[in-house]
Amino acid sequence: MPYLARVNDESHACFAPRLDKKQIEDGLEFAPKFDEHGLLAAVAIDVHTREPLMLAWMNRESLRLTLEKGEAVYWSRSRQEIWHKGATSGQIQKVIEMRTDCDQDAVILYVEQAGGGACHTGRNSCFYRSIHPGSPAALRFLQEND
Image (cartoon, rainbow, N blue to C red):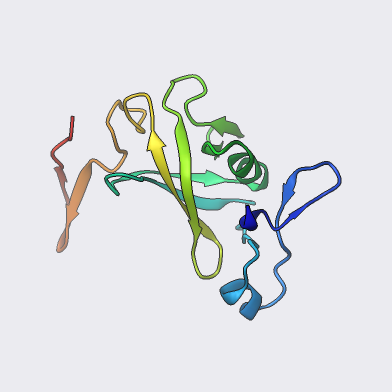
């Protein structure tokens, strides 16, 4: 896979160094930018419906594991541990495609969602409400696709 950039002596994926703006914006090596907490935003989207499923966070290790396994692995900020999505719930996210933004500080995972839904509430998506412009306190539930 070209986005794995390099493989170190332990045969683990590692990422390209962040050298300059041209390399980051136009280069072909994945050089993710983690925030001050060592995290990268990751949005999971259903590969078939293009529905946003969830927003989670990845650290260097969970991103590496995602690329190796081909399944979404996140960093749980509340539990402070690696979280292989679906390992206990069965709601596994098989990664079909991964994209990064222009400055490589966020990723989108196009996934095949297994196990009935992505949200811990039991819904298909964590994004099950809409906010109306001009009235930020007014939430509206979206129709669920069951």
